[in-house]
Image (tube, rainbow over the protein chains, first blue to last red):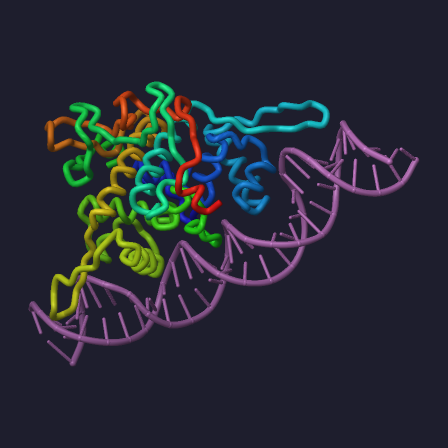
Length: 153
Length: 153
DNA sequence: GTAGCGAGTTCCCTGAAGCAACTGACTACG
DNA sequence: CGTAGTCAGTTGCTTCAGGGAACTCGCTAC
């Protein structure tokens, strides 16, 4: 994304943007998630420059979001898969999708639907308080200093 | 973020990135959320270039994430506040925070803690299936074509 | 009348993104 | 055998957005 490196900030949002916030990166992860695992597939789907795609895939592998797996020896061919870290990031993508469906989709409705295999129904991401289970609204929380902050003070 | 405009893609993630995915934008929204409402406060907190900050604030107001409110008439002074749309986006920021706390915070622990006023406890964002309430994992969902896709086909 | 603040704007410079063409290892077709 | 095609990138050129610092404008305080 950025000239300024966000990774050094004492902020989990900034540090997350450092590994997944560069331009195109969230869309690349989405593509790998939904089954575009190969270079040319992703390139064609997104219309991204090949140079930038090669760059992003490299840093995503370096930061442990993806693994590069050889699926053919002759000729050597590679594909990309989500790691556990990458899969968990996709829950963020699902909340982004839920927000986008609500605020940007308009009359036409959501471009994609998510079906939860657990219950078999169409669903969207619902963000809740990990303690009481009620919906978590940004205007109903207080932000306090945590241990990771003090360690640096 | 980007040369390429994501807003035209038929994808809620891309459309969300179009309004909130440019470099610095998520951090600016976080700042406004936690109480940095004024230009110089945000600029000092983030160390962002004043030009880019002015730019981002303008587009955030245009896209309805923030409102620019005059809090002094003489001299004219303004501050920024989240709209409903902007507040709801902060739930995305909370899931990003939860992911970053888990995968990037390391030994020191999370830089900030979130206290849910509803139950009074420290909490993090928990993403669940809107239908059955179970945790929503990216590897346990199927992605299907939605109405917004077909409308464009 | 000088200093200072808040909210920006203007300027120049560098570096990242876009685009197109090229490479290299191989397979398939006629 | 020669040509075309696939896949996974790399290279080179150009342009435009971000970084940084200085400047502006309206006003207040000393």
